[in-house]
Image 1 (tube, rainbow, N blue to C red):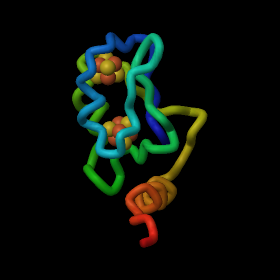
Image 2: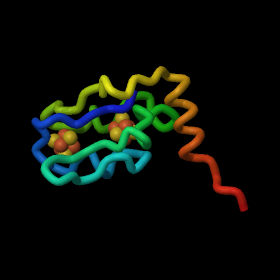
Image 3: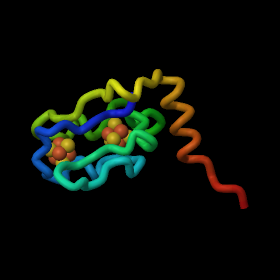
Length: 85
Ligand code: SF4
Ligand code: SF4
């Protein structure tokens, strides 16, 4: 399951540099997570780094992107696969 940043985000920019997948970016109003790149940190860390550092605890599991650990692992492998050549 990808994670989701909710409206309580205070745009502090603490989470963005911590994401190993580059999934977090500054949105129009608040920061956002691209579900195509969020692996819940599977493959990199034992726990989601953004959740760990967010000072206002505004990051939740995205109910619209349910994925089990195997799916997250597959996404990690896809994202880290080296391009041919
Ligand atoms: Fe990035 Fe990990 Fe947060 Fe997903 S859980 S947005 S991969 S830091
Ligand atoms: Fe928003 Fe939390 Fe990220 Fe700060 S750490 S930008 S409050 S989601």
